[in-house]
Length: 155
Image 1: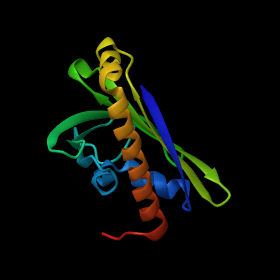
Image 2 (image 1 turned 30 degrees about the vertical axis):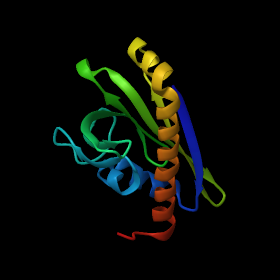
Image 3 (image 1 turned 180 degrees about the horizontal axis):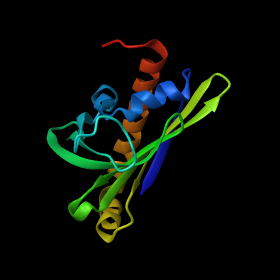
């Protein structure tokens, strides 16, 4: 009920962290999440801050919004958030870890579903398909971040 993808980027950890920690950038990088906005008056990332993400699930038209809460926010090192469900229960945690190298940064994106009975059943029945979609999406997200970080804005 988890997976990760790592991509090397010829950019500093701080530059990459600035891109991924500003959730309003998500539509630029993610193949599924097409937008996000800060909630509760927040304008920047911090542990406990909430935001709403807008998702086009699997790219075939099922669109919905999720509320997320930032759970790790260490500039240049880590950014993570949990998608929350009813009762503020964590459903899925998305994490970016940044490791400096001699010529840039190794960036790892990962997801981990919460260990609940409904999610274990879901993963058992549909996990093979969703896991494949998540892995492909993480690869595409990191490719887009890499391109943007290494080549600059191409809006």
